Length: 572
Image 1: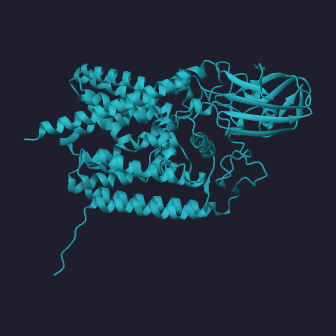
Image 2: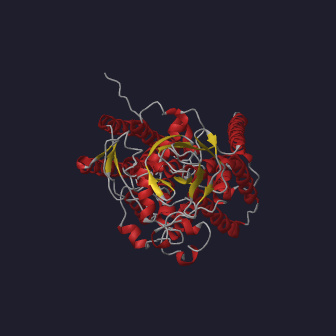
Image 3: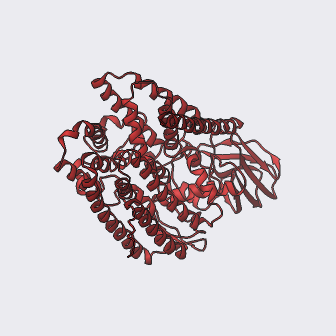
């Protein structure tokens, strides 16, 4: 008689996730391209800059000389990316486009297993796996995987369940809890070093949540845990904060749409819901919410209420209910661009948690299985449909000799990631404040500036000269012949708080920043000139990186030690 093998549901779910990702990975690997567009061009080049730095055995710099048309723009300095460095470093052995694929798959796997482990610590393990899979295969996690890359936000989303549960522990604790302080600071480090706007949103949500809880329970000691974790987070995040401070002192141009925050109505959030929603509810979250509301267990209202309150705050801030006409004029808030992008991306996890709290394990399993089946069907449908639609798109490679328009979608290859034909990456974001934009309103650079950037135009005494461009991490070189003594304006942005090392034919020369924000120098050699522009970040930055690594290492070791001591104390 055959013995019956019953595989736990959680292992079936894990196997399903691995099979889905393996099938997609095999298909994408053989294609040798990534079909994408919009902001993906921007974020692909951010990763490429870090990749090149590691391949040249250097710490990634603040200025982008390899990417973004070699302008030395402060994209890397102003966009936190340190949390992504380990993932980029270990995948540098792949060619660029396959590295992107491996990173996307790794982020999906991280999201699933981190979510599962966090949920399984509090709920039934099988149900936790089902809910973790629903979350991983929907919303911004899914969207960033197959459609439009958002590296920093995607990594933040991988830790969303631990962050939510950490919120609950923070506001409920009635004693000074070092373990909780360490955990909070480590989670905060991941977010702050991945996406600066997200740390502001999450801490704003935490403080509002804390204030409401204190009003009811008068639990003031919990604030000590928040302050201590915030202080530790500040110390371990000094590298990002330091470069942000130094660059901001140079009076840089604001990011796109500063002071104008778009916000949709709650009804639009519902009617525009989709499986891969970015700024609205996901269809799976809406369905989960409807099931809970229609079958709410009154005996569990006290457990449900903190999560419902948290969800309501996110929805209010993520829609037009909040007074964005007033908020958009305030610091930090004015850079939000779209309220849904900042808040609603976090709204689709809590309804899934409510399912696990509201129902018994048996009922929750049935509901979770149905939700996962619908999620898989929807996700597979939208991804395969996207793949079919992208078949006829143009390929972007180093052989592409035409301009790729800002709203154009292409099949990006390894040699196309850093193409100078991509105009969407010609942005005023974090360029020197002297830059000229269309109508002086920001968002789009003046047309003559765009032409100068596209053609990497060097000007000698007001006239364009032919030059040969070469570049490496932290430096760019322009070689010219038949130049005249006098002023030379390079297509390289200049930041007043940074110190450049500029040489003419190997000899160091002085420089200035002209009225349009370009580096300018006086040259003396009238036959030929090789101008090398180099920038090295301050030594203080390296020391702060070392301090951050030591702080993170000590925090992690201390947290593991305290957990070990706690386990030993529970052994009879």
